[in-house]
Image 1 (cartoon, rainbow over the protein chains, first blue to last red):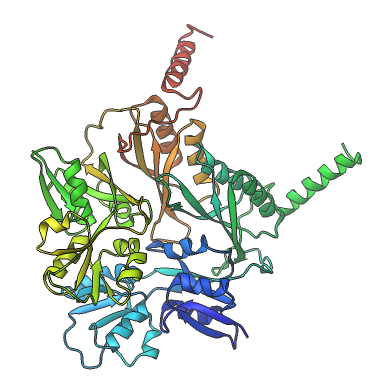
Image 2 (cartoon, helix red, strand yellow):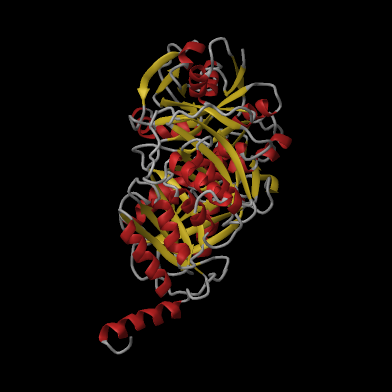
Length: 303
Length: 303
């Protein structure tokens, strides 16, 4: 049995994702912030942390990215995709909604719905979607924009459900652990790194070309400021493939050589099961055969 | 005299930046959101819009990026950098602060200060830093995290000033207009585009290599989701140089050829005055001489 920390309190989308990512019998432990969930794993207070990493509408979840670049390295071992459809919760018998609370990215994702249905309600930021349900339950605000699972935890009434400005919005979650055994490759994997480069013309082009020349498909790139100067960034780079594959190991070694620092954030199966694109002459057997050929020529067995 | 819209209300950092970017006698008009400020220019209700584009701690201001990718194209003509030091405003005579309000990115930037000085205050999100001052003035919340200029507009008391978790934090602002005359090149310019590429291995590497092969220094890259699928992004790319320069025109033509769509967001002088890095053999005279040589060979004058 493992302890899995998640960005809580109970009743958030992250709890829904953590339930899906946990093994039967695992204990789920809410953490107050994304950083706190990651810290619990670093400090050994939890075996894993489930945190949101990206939303298809709002983009990167920057507290997660910044949290992964602090402290000791953590490694993603599993991924989950959740459709983002909200429920609006109120205290039973509520007739007028003067204030509506939620986590700010959630408020952004129901902006049109709020403009149409609660145009006069003042918007209050809470530290999570479920914290908004807590505030409604405590009588501090009138309505909460929540994950559907929140209705299971708080004695509130569902004013509306399935609320989403964009029907196809999804959030991607990752389960992070201390570095250790990497999950086995499946053919539909994603590898993530943080690359820090010297500030000189062309460095990012060079990194991405190392991937492109090996036919490796980039799935995401985010630049986060170093907090020193404008124009200096850490690059969060996600690409198809698994570090156990020869083609990916070859690319990672090239990136390590070109970067001032590389932090490995994990190789894990993709939740959507999309198999990696592999270019002609850039398959793992091509890399293996080429390396064997060099070895044989070195020994004088071939020329 | 021009009408300059800015992300208001009165008393925001954006008003401070708009004051700096406006010409003497210009009329400054607050807009409720970043999108609304940009819309005023698109609809002819204002001649320019001053909006924040990037913060050295929090990174890209995503509502600005998304707003620039909607509706008709707008073009940046001037830039301003503002140090981000906040004032904490309260009603005169306030003794206890139970709630503190501000624009969420501002709350993030004084997180440590709030933890130390107002650990028990509940945080309320407002649509701008100045809206927080309005809420304090109206008695709805106890304290506001504001731009220093807010103290000039509202009858509030300064509880603390010069508040910033990181002393060197800066925000970069741009003044956008309808497409028209591009400001003259100064040798210390920045060019910005939105590039949309077909979803295929290597496209972003190819774009950045077009810049790097011409010795053009990238200053910023942000990926914003297309809202269709994970893995599909619009790339906001900033680089040194001016579209009037031969080397930059050559690069932009190559990007236009490789992209499914390019939106030009302007070439304007950098607020920090940093001159463009130019690589050997990649100066404007090198591009001009090379083009003249091809022309002469085409005519049979040279070989």
